[in-house]
Length: 303
Ligand code: PSU
Ligand code: MN
Image 1 (cartoon, rainbow, N blue to C red):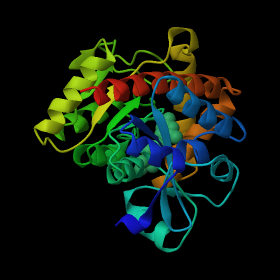
Image 2 (image 1 turned 30 degrees about the vertical axis):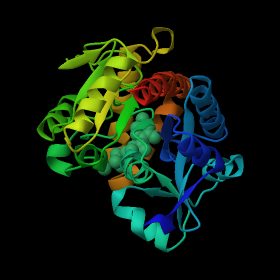
Image 3 (image 1 turned 135 degrees about the horizontal axis):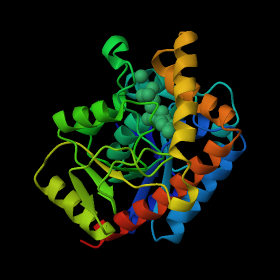
Image 4 (image 1 turned 180 degrees about the horizontal axis):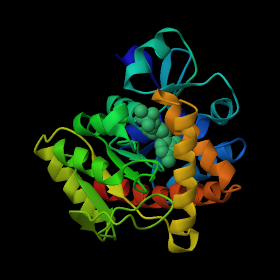
């Protein structure tokens, strides 16, 4: 298995010195944001993690290897090439075997992080049950991954391109804890509120680190979601973004967009329709998640 995994120098040193490490995904770079904001975001988020006492490990597939920790040229390649595959669990073996460039989703980043023994992973939003899933059966592989792979994911909830109540039902069925960070309500990515009440909330990174430790000690297989709302000053007005999302979902339907193309299509439509406002908020919330994720990893490391 080791033959497929390659750690960057920074990550290797962090492992040798038992330092806290935070994984980052690359689909958000290649398929979630336009260039050059995507690569700027990726670098800044890595720096925020360092500034908060942890070591960043952005994950991607390059040259037949799972790269754990990327140099600047690799980040640039992922951000600005048009032949980057979107790699979920299904795609991982093929993309490695055929030596394609692959950007990892939440699901495959969790798999790779677990292989590299990294417990914490920061991103923007997780995939979920899509609106209309009762007819399309479009449910992100991220949700199943959360039920079986031992990585805690720090995010700003999920976009309301998804059906949030159904997403929560699915996670409940699969036994995945969703902990609101300083909130009792599931955040909806661009907005702090969704109207969906949470079963758990925590006020400090230490509390989350403790819960994670107990989950691991009990061998309760699977991940955990930390739902961290976008800062108040960066959130978008709910009615404004909701109407844009509804339009985007409708256009996806009219264009017959489905499968792995669905989420990237919706994300880029939302950026286009909001004239970039959604992108600004998206970047801010990932940065905010990086602060919290690094603090949780640091707290866990002290146990
Ligand atoms: N949601 C976002 N930004 C993203 C994604 C989701 O707000 O970039 C990406 C993540 O990589 C996530 C993936 O794992 O989309 C989900 O895709 P799908 O719905 O095809 O499972
Ligand atoms: Mn899907």
